Image 1: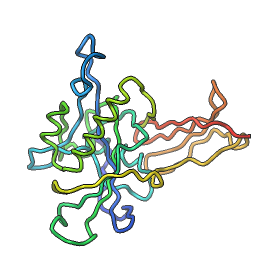
Image 2 (image 1 turned 135 degrees about the horizontal axis):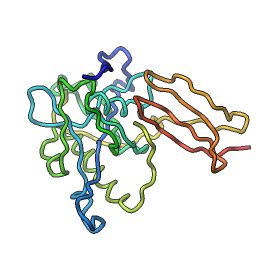
Image 3 (image 1 turned 135 degrees about the vertical axis):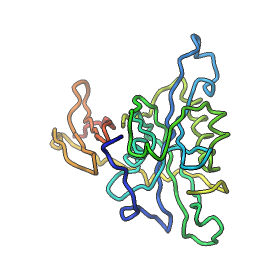
Length: 251
């Protein structure tokens, strides 16, 4: 059993225009069964990890409330760790942002209960033997067709469709990645609000430091010059994994 306790409650929950902000991810792995796998369909070479809920046969992707002491990326990282017990490499660009209603407010014609969910793709590099929500959730690797069949929420199916599209486009170009590491089905809309994504301020030479400071629970940040180029490497350590980004130095 994991010694780390999952976060509960909503006292630190972020809201925006009456929407509860949610962050999650689609954990995945590339299978290497085919010797000539580059000639195969990407859908047949990818498996995604989904988790269960008590007393239900369908499945969901890890997701949960985005809290006020973490970035949206850190929230996705935390949910993958707490609900599925995995770490890996998270693609920084979101698959999209979907607006949906919580299970308890499906039949209520009001803004209360509305959620805005950011979803990311997480390439899994480590599966933990124990994790915080292990007693309430099991995890299972599924192919894409199985994932569509078992996915509980319509908005998560839309996120999975976008995931497949992104993976097909990036099959030959592995860029744009950084290392880190109830609702009912119904109408959902997707859009990407880049202004809501975390940003890193511009830096200059005299800002080059090597330090570590706490930025959120179980997270720290390290800033240091690159040994191979004129860049700063900004790394965030969160729940046992690292998020890194190189920034050019300005003078």
